[in-house]
Length: 294
Image (cartoon, rainbow, N blue to C red; front, side, top):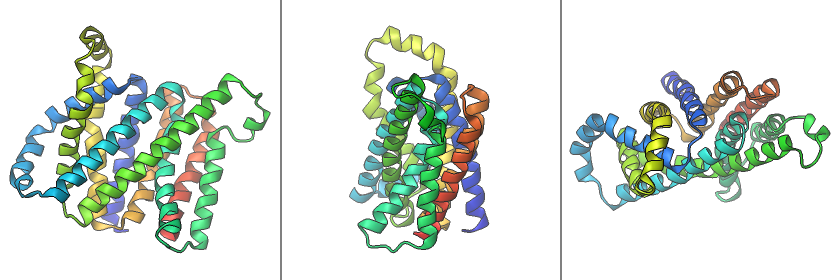
């Protein structure tokens, strides 16, 4: 992978972890996702509309289908992710979500597309499994009584993390195809995809307006953080995909898990930070090995 692409991915990973911290602190639902979409639409309008004026008139059915598909996958991903944050620890949900996406992509390529797997790929799968075990509590899981609150919280976190990973794998493939083969602008994919997302989830802001107004007063700071910096993170990744193989970029961006494991434990007071950091490192190493070895 070119150094330029690697630098873009590492920077994107740090930004991605930061906005996930803000989303976790917000504790929002689909209405929070709508708040962030509104902020994104308004803040990035000058750049999005300027580029769109030049390129969007030339889009055909393929381009609009890609943007629509990407938007739907992103909406479901974000809603599932936020629900996971409300019900479990970020240091469980986030690493599993970010690690399982590239893992699923590699497994699909091996089982359905007939790609061969190398020793490095098998080592990657083992590392991911080991990392999942550590993030879920490690050996302490076996000493935890069945039905305990802590174990149930971990189980819910694993479930939502894995569900989120499915949708991450979906939009990664769609958007990677768009920038590499359809030669679409990363900025426009993200901006116009957000406009479609807002059409899908915006109506939630029109129901029970007093409650929405109350939520905005408590969540507006976090919505602004997510709406302003999350597009930067993803656009950097899409630009990296233009100059490096998708199979390298997708695993490499999981360095964000390391930042999240560290910041989640320190800023949010979540427990078992040592084991979860070790697990995040293993998952990151595993998905990278899958990217290079699958």
